[in-house]
Length: 418
Image 1 (cartoon, rainbow, N blue to C red):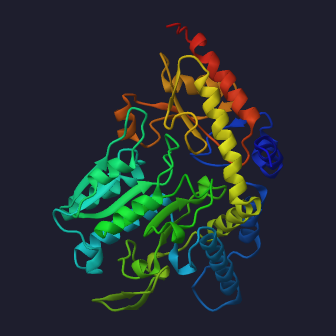
Image 2 (image 1 turned 30 degrees about the vertical axis):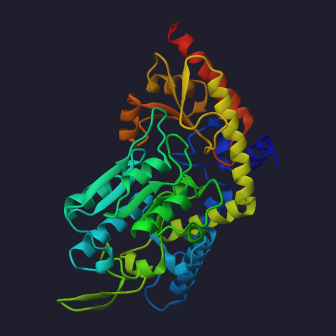
Image 3 (image 1 turned 90 degrees about the vertical axis):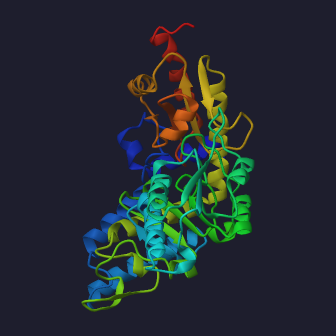
């Protein structure tokens, strides 16, 4: 199916476009639109089958629990995991924090010594991280005395495998990196980094927020130890994400959240926890959101993730071509012709990114402006903010053309002639 036809055909599945028929929505990297099947799955459950899960023995509880756990099975299968390897979280940010806090507790002697960090051990990240995959490791290093190292980016905001090799040492215990940069669209060489980690016995954590919605991803094949992704970036609800972890690691990772529904035995002095995934799911769960998450992966699976990737490769090519032929606009990230996700961040000479965003919005083109929760990357680029266009399954070439037309008018509108 062509780039134009997949995006245009699928618009009928999304109520947003019925309400905004002329919209150009190019902010899917922040939050994607939802198809009717996802919306109705969640609302139908709330209306007809809503009940507590894993609590009590009633028929209502049993039916709700079945729906909740079936959704887990479908999301797990979508990313190549067993159902015990997928934990519901409040989002990808929560998932990464759960890993960091669990390792912190293990370092205090509350979990497996194999996960513990000591003073002088090293954590390696990249300068391109979203803050959610940087600040938790800063805090973990501060708690344990570990050293946080980073792979620098170049003038285009890109980091390299060679740069990663230079930062990894025999003291490296954990490498955390983005599968796809939310700013540049750079796609990481995951298998190479997993191999590098194996050489020094380090764990790997993959920020997969910008990859799972847009390309075939199988975590077991990739070989990463942990990964995190969010439903709201992949046609699903807000307020829920997922933590993937190899079963043997999840079973020894201390839970970051404690309370009801995740224990086997509690005394006044001691608590014992259930196996994964339940040991990480304290309290009342996001049940209806999980149902919507399951429906979202069903929708994506029905499209075929190889076809989704092919469609978005065409969008990425069109975005790059559009930006590079626009005078006074600089493209960040991979060079034209190089592999990238369907993300294009740009700098418009002489015009602040926020002014560009307002100009585009006035012309019906929704994009993202700011530092995209990646201040170190923008600091390395020497700018406070960029303008980002990001695509999904409903994006087509007409969207790219309207984006390019509006982008080409920005500098004239603001009187920038140099």
